[in-house]
Amino acid sequence: MSEIKEVFEENSISDEQMLRYINDAIKAIAVGGQSYKIGSRSLTRANLTDLVALKKELESRVNQSGESPFFDNTYVALFEGR
Image (cartoon, rainbow, N blue to C red; front, side):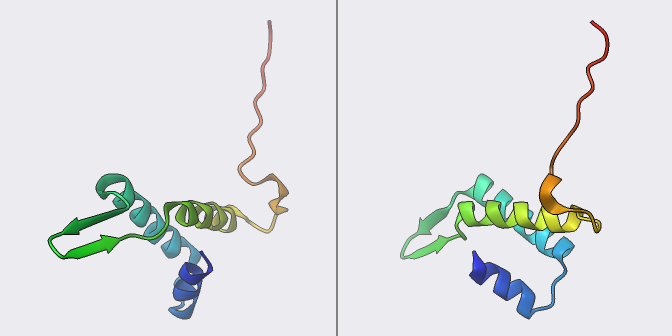
């Protein structure tokens, strides 16, 4: 996963743009599979587990607005009445 981050950071890509690329890569794996072979040529895409972990980290950084990161992706539900 750190290899993916390094490539994006070396090319000065923003977190928002990185998140778009990561989502596209996850979609490509979901639609076309992790790897495939045509004749003697083969393609293996990035590791899905690493992409999902990086996506969560990026979403946290993008959604963070100077607040504590401890409650990222936390929701509150109010159930009133009975």
